[in-house]
Image 1 (tube, one colour):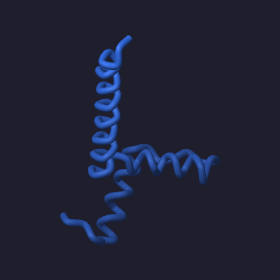
Image 2 (cartoon, rainbow, N blue to C red; image 1 turned 90 degrees about the vertical axis):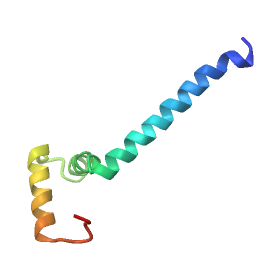
Image 3 (tube, helix red, strand yellow; image 1 turned 180 degrees about the horizontal axis):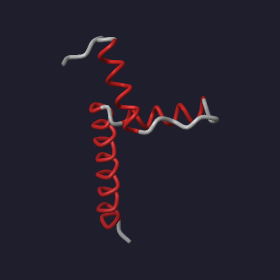
Length: 74
């Protein structure tokens, strides 16, 4: 196997890592990762109770934002 034969696989792996980074960033910017972080925290800090459903979480999150407006743009 020559060095040039391994290049497409390495390029594909690099592209996959770059795409994973873009997806991670987009989920952070849009707030999609907030629920996953909440569930991870609840399972770690409060293993005895069931975390809120995603729907309940977002309702609570929006209620909290409306009650405590901070540095939001909109």
